[in-house]
Length: 154
Image 1 (cartoon, helix red, strand yellow):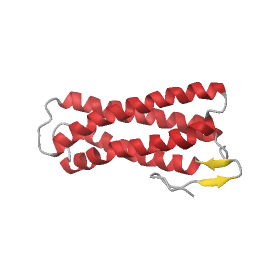
Image 2 (image 1 turned 90 degrees about the vertical axis):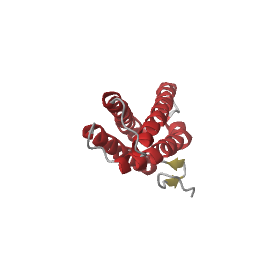
Image 3 (image 1 turned 30 degrees about the vertical axis):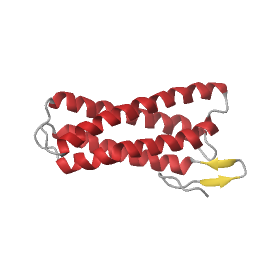
Image 4 (image 1 turned 120 degrees about the vertical axis):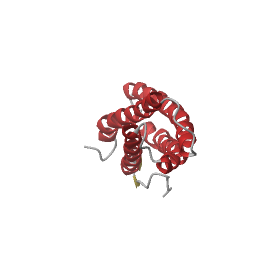
């Protein structure tokens, strides 16, 4: 069985059943969302610089690993019907948007974590909230519409 950054799944006669891996990836990304929300709530004066550095170094690799797993193993199983192929296309576009936003946010988190001041706390808070809101919305859709349709879903 192939190991993946977000966990391991099960094999059956029909092929890879990625439900557990996808759920684990979602859990890890939701933890990152909670950490981003804590930073946004602590602005402008009480932000933990070490938390910023940790998120700056882990956010993009986490998102990339989860998205890569979904695109390689989950979406092909889900996109069997033409209707689902359209949904997968939309989800792939959201992956690109979230990854780009995470890259920009990681730069800002790293800068603040290294001691540079937050020039515009409102803009920084907006960047944080925009990303974690988008990620949560995306994950909720995948949990409601993708996980339930995968083999073994309910």
